Length: 94
Image 1 (tube, rainbow, N blue to C red):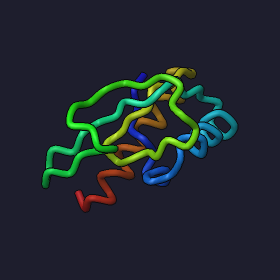
Image 2 (cartoon, rainbow, N blue to C red):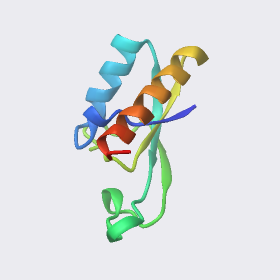
Image 3 (cartoon, rainbow, N blue to C red):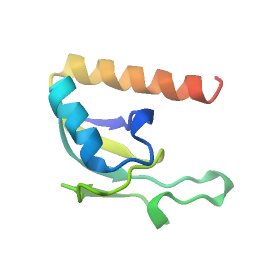
């Protein structure tokens, strides 16, 4: 499943999110969906087109445009996805 990156990991290295997902959530991250901002001409991580990278470098910096591919119990994954989306909406003032 592809879920949005939890906002607390924006601008942080990939390994921090991996540790949290593995040890706190028992969810296995497989890779990143490197997204692209289309608003205001801002591009995530310098890419103009989205792409997927498996087993990213631990120091890879995560952005708000990214998603993370994960494995885990479906109820846990859907709950985490819903929680992250709600947090993102709250941060945007929706």
